[in-house]
Image (cartoon, rainbow, N blue to C red; front, side, top):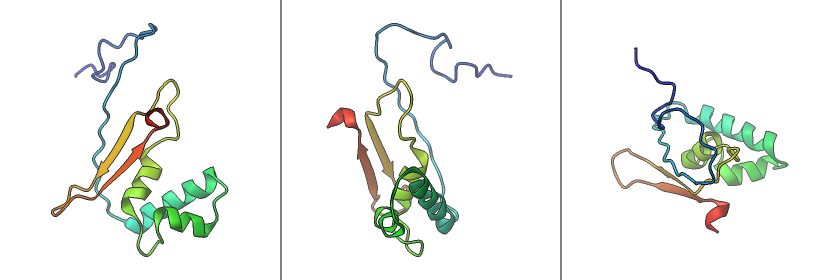
Length: 110
């Protein structure tokens, strides 16, 4: 059985030096139930902010026509990862045709 203790990020030792390191993280998904995805994203919006139902729909679309990219961004990305600065986030549709991309710029890039 393979040793996955370091998850492919070096030797698994903890580095405490001041040197900054950048990593690239990839996640590939297939959306099987858009309404279920929307419900989870809406719940996250409502539980983490003071948004109204109308504001949630402005952000991620209505349940009948959800913005898949916005729902995925809402659910897949934590607000912050302790000890890290998010540099860039890109989400692209991989289906046939012209890919639709959603991009989120971090505070560090503004």
